[in-house]
Image 1 (cartoon, one colour):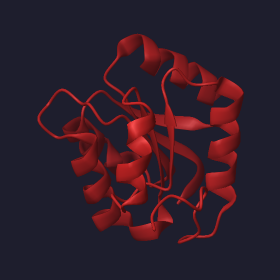
Image 2: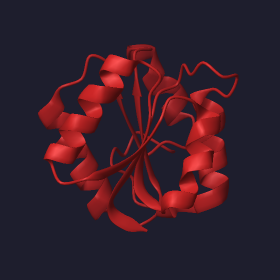
Image 3: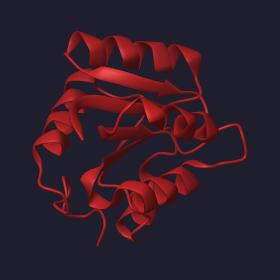
Length: 135
């Protein structure tokens, strides 16, 4: 796993661009996809340490399916952070074990997002960034 490589799956172009700029300014490299299918095509470019996944994706593969497939491929070696506009109701499905390590809602606070990524990069596989997640 490359500690500085982040897989970003976000379909909104302006959010995707802002996240790329934020991550690269913080010293991370990004593999960036608009869809779930595109993300898996990109994974030949390296093994990311963190994935940021939107839930509502446009190509028929939801963020839920992306998370499931990422877990199947990487197990707990890959930390997964959901960044979604779904809102507060999102916390219940995450806590029920869909496989994410952490979540944030849009709009997001850039400093908080970077701090959560730092924690996820620094965790041991199988640890949770948020104890309420992945129970």
